[in-house]
Image (cartoon, rainbow, N blue to C red; front, side, top):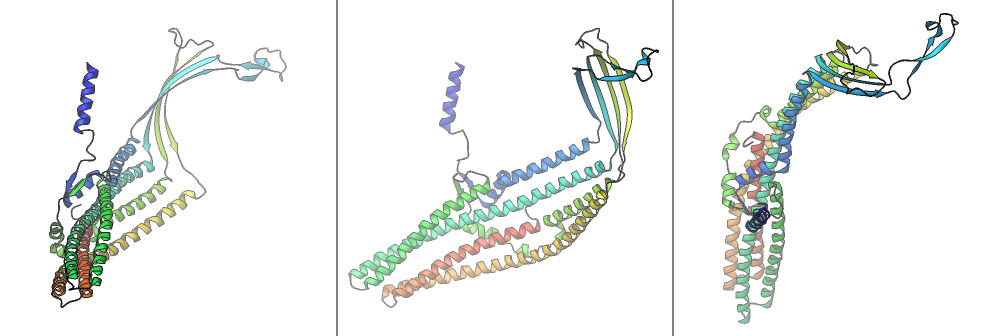
Length: 450
């Protein structure tokens, strides 16, 4: 009966498709895609694990200062007892003074167990290690923030590319439909002797070129969707549907307040990462200096030993002899051939370099901010220019088409107007994508939405 229930459950499981949602259609807008990527992207996942590992590292280092208790059990059987030479006079006073006899001591077998407690009393490296582990934790946390920024930027770019391909395909379909209608009309005019065969052939070439370009865009669309799925942490071929429109992206990308936002290089994640390198360099100098300090460890040992020629160590009447030790071990470094001193010198140079890098980073961040701000401001103007150029190209193409139908234009001018329109359509979409990416980069630098 139980096996029957299992089979019914398995049948229902497969029938309803509840064996996994990797292939379910994901419907996401841009903001939802970013949040999804931050939760499922492999790089974010690994960066979060690095933070967890760093926290455990802090505990690991701290625990080195706690009491350490170890137990040991050993058993020995003498296959051949060691022999010592003893003066013969010990056993026979009449023996010559230079006479020795071989003697072996001890039993054939022995066993012992012991428990030892060690307590670190002083160790300069341990103190530095505590600070280092906390700095390592801070480094991993900053790396997570930086990774999230990068994932956000990649998601925005991938989503924008996918939307770009969708919109470009839609425009291409509209263009093909218009050219197909024009071709039908031109063929009718050719049958009536109103246009030449060259005009028909020219339009057929334009239509063939558009169809080839559309086929290429369709393949590119599959590629960019696979890339977006990859960034989102999904299977490349998993179904995906974008819910934001091109106008939604335009509205979200225009934020003039960003141009007036205050910028402090010392508050950026890149500056904090550089600061952590300085702290790590300083700690490395202290660590090398701590190698000159003594190490003091206290210990307590308690155990029992047993001896016998036969294996009777589990017998009740076996005699066990106690032993206990209380002591302190002091390890004092005296001379290492100047190795420790040279290591301190190397660490100090690395520390000075990290300080210089921090100063350079502040200047570079200021330059980067100004560049990204200018790029974003230019992208806003460029989008408006592209929109105006597109409207103008549409107007020119429409006039040339009317002129051609009325017999006052020619096919060359019409074809040129069409090519110009297609270029303006592509430039307009590209300007939207550029604006979106520039805004994301500027927001990342300002620490917005981290």
